Length: 100
Image (cartoon, rainbow, N blue to C red):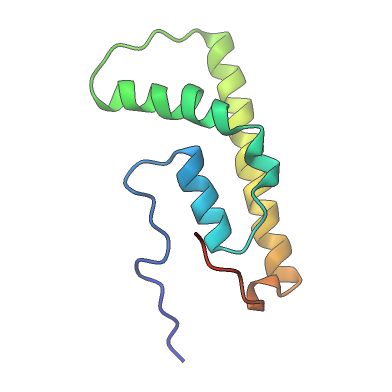
């Protein structure tokens, strides 16, 4: 059986907390662990990424970088754990509600 996969997850060419929420909901996962990190994602990550991508200078110190690194790694580990738990419990087999 061939499972359709193209076009299911739309990052809109730029990840933001809203896009992350849509991706997580599309996967049938819980967004609540990331709810309090929405401002961090949008202001500290996406905004900085956009400055760099558009060739604008960005002054960031070692301490700020290390905080960003630790936060991003925690978010990635949480996301990975959610996916692994969903796979281990067959949660991916349950029908997810449509995204509004």
